[in-house]
Image (cartoon, rainbow, N blue to C red; front, side, top):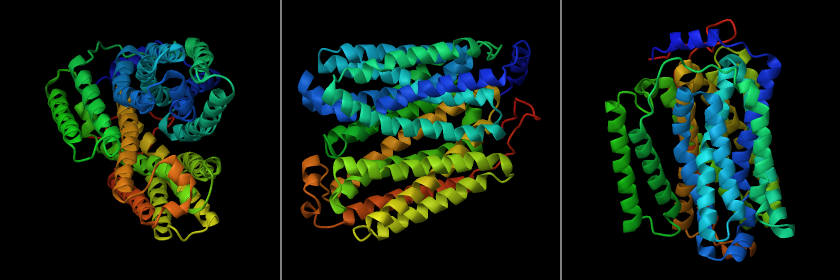
Length: 494
């Protein structure tokens, strides 16, 4: 990892950015992140209408799965490309690909083309997540970067609230294609905002090569694994030959990818980055925490409808406690990190607090009042939110500038994969314990359920995931955060 000198030479030839230009760039990349985040939440309310309009309703899950597969698999690849080609052309390419996918989806005359359009959207959307945090990492030193965690969490909060509202409104009162057309003006605005300021971001002066074979193996291994996670327990039994075959194929592809990393002259993901204990434990903590967070957000509304008699709409409103708690936790963490030396303790306390709230929730399943449930979910969200800025900043602070994109891409990739794996595992627990997940059975209330134990197992699984996150956070080394007074090019921790 010896590219610090070329980068410094390039940076020296680049005129510095003003604070206004930095804020403009950050606003633009957050708008691009909002595009990708909205497309994970805006589609679900419109799916019944889309199925009625295009037919082949049995393929509706692929509208979500197609996007998830490509977005998750592409995240680390975009990180490497941006390290090689520069942030500006890479993020421009990601936005343009995303807009092309939106156009295909909006004009789709049948279900097949809509699924293809969603997959193309994911090809761009996967880059928007990773590149947004990478660009912020370029602009702001780690000690100050934490305060932007609240902006990122706020972006997700807006998407989580506005997405379902817009999707339902467009599908019910206007036309379902508007959920894709809306991306076009937003994407063009984002391109216009970041066009000129991003020209001042430096590009490494050293020539690089992109490992096409490694990229292909990574995308294939991820896609096959996510197919198994999405199909297992729903389309096929977890012990079916199809799922076992997919898991076996994924394991083989991951093994081949590992061999490729060792043998490639310039691997897709630097082995120095993967060997860094801060990167290793930081990404694992994000992986396990996101598994608990996303899994809880999927099955908590089911619990609210089944045992507290809430309607689908009311349970969505009640879910704001978990969401706003996470935003508040990230905001608190981001504001506190620059003021303390032992910043890792913030994440440890947050993970422990979330673990306690989830464990109490599991113990009180079926017996807690709605008020107690809300307090516990707010606490779980707050504690989990405290961990995310620490993990992100620790990973970015541990690598040199030449590998910032790769490290952030790996972090984004494992965060997305953790969410998918969490939902899959909790789904297997739910189905294995006879929990009816169909909308009609849930609307009839708790009379359709004979026991609250399936939910207790789900909440226990979430608390176990947070316990693992707490463990790896304790194992993660702590490195002093760089600020304006220190070098912009850190030394990686070996």
